[in-house]
Image (cartoon, rainbow, N blue to C red; front, top):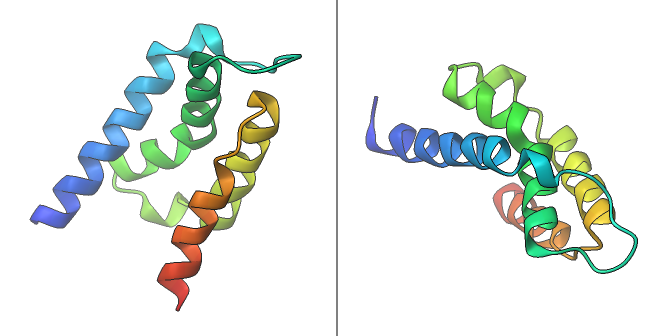
Length: 94
């Protein structure tokens, strides 16, 4: 495994662990979400993609589906973070 792959796997493992640690905060809120709820929903949105990276299944990492899941997490969390992810994707495409 090269250094770049190791970096990606470390970040993927962190996302997956955060999803487990924050699982009791997953769900929608009526008003302003706590940071824990927003974090839980974001980690949950990406945990399948993180697991695909951890398990060497990059073909199962669907970028469009990941962005869609991030947008859903944003709505559930009353957050404003999906544009940052979309900007990253747009940067890579150019």
